[in-house]
View (cartoon, rainbow, N blue to C red):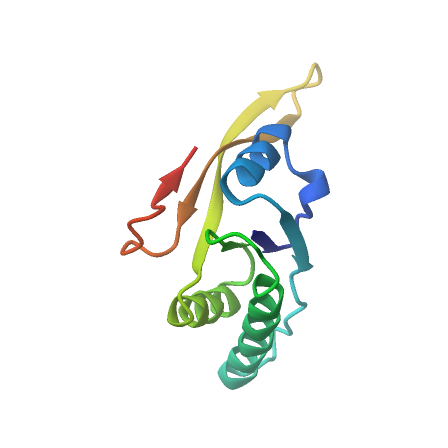
Length: 133
């Protein structure tokens, strides 16, 4: 199972990203990324990361697969703490990488599009999945 903890629901992912996730992990489950106040203390962010790590572990406990991970992208201090917690629990955390393509419309306005490339593990010590395509 792959948990998607980001502001980008799986339903909006490009087909190649969804297919890669399903091939690697089977079911993909969304957990919306929390709103984190800019005024939050380090301790408050850590406590929120712990709540979400517990929530992820409860969901992963229902997974029949042995290969599970959490795809996480969002506010940096939350992500950092969440990744540390999941590593402590033995669950891989991954990020999706994309190629930014810039193009200009007929009026000269700059536009960007992103093309999924691969998933990359946050944990360099994870030999089971450093990079996937």
